[in-house]
Image (tube, rainbow, N blue to C red):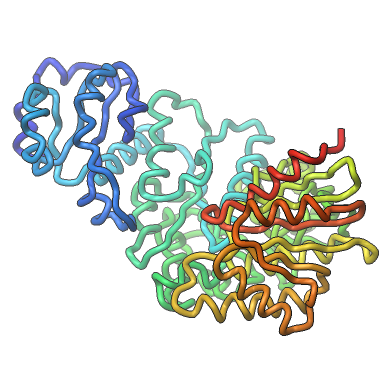
Length: 475
């Protein structure tokens, strides 16, 4: 805040602010509006061009805002419209940084445990599983809305504590996509008591340049944890396991393949949407019937179980809670159709490792007589080698045991080319997700198991919409 702030109406200093918004359309009476502009977005590692919200300050006051936060240089540019509100404006050098400081102050006043989750894939599922496990123990859990995991989404979540301090714990997803210490910045807003590292994969490599730099960026979570806290590390990912020396407190490892403190044994895949395994930690064992498929989801469950253990839950308590989880929408959501076919809707995000992991899940969870179909959208942010990566991924899909591949949009053609070159002749390209939906709706048959996997930008959820228009779900 700078000297201009001295012009603020003194009567406002005693006013209670009921809410905070960064979108003028969401301003509430007695609320405060933070007007963001391109300089803040650029300085805080957001890619792209954004509207200058300073122009919407008058509408914020029209909606009953107590005060608005603006950059002084943006005020000068919009002075004609904003001068009537001068004594209700708080001037700052960086509105995003001010919003983050506000969130940090609210967090300090709340002063209860934070569980932070990061990883190249599975963050939202692991966050939801962790929140579910902790809530089952009677705790009131704050969690990110949707995947609000960046420098604006996390503060938007945390400011909920201003009006409701009754939350016992916050489970917060922390993401990154640039080499600008994004996770370190998030840890400064809400330092983790428990830091959960899921995996390190070649995601956002276009911006970070190498898998080693991705590992360094993800390790910022463990480096930013509180002294005396708990680091929860995936023992099956050697890059995550290598972060153990960075822990500032106790470490709990989890895994399937490698020795770990929390393990899954005797894994059995039933029909899609049902996996059973034995949860093991120390001398405690309990059977779990888990309503998600795939090794990656079992690892997410183990991460959540490890957090539960760090909060003193027994293995039996954790196992009981895992039986009642539900997949987040479009993230491994299993749809059983009345006509006898099954669809796995994983239309939220995609990268080569995540796609191949879901393909493996499809093959492992299907009976030998079922037709296994993959609908895969092009994968984004893969850099200059995107065509080769798609082609190689298509080759891997072809050798995985699936029966058909439909590549969707752009580099989806290279997925098809790679699959055909590796012997999967039943492969075809769809120009967009609408076209892919028409193809699938025309050929879906009893016994089919269909994986729909794509990034949000490709909109592969349209495939699901086409199926729901034509077919009914099981009652």
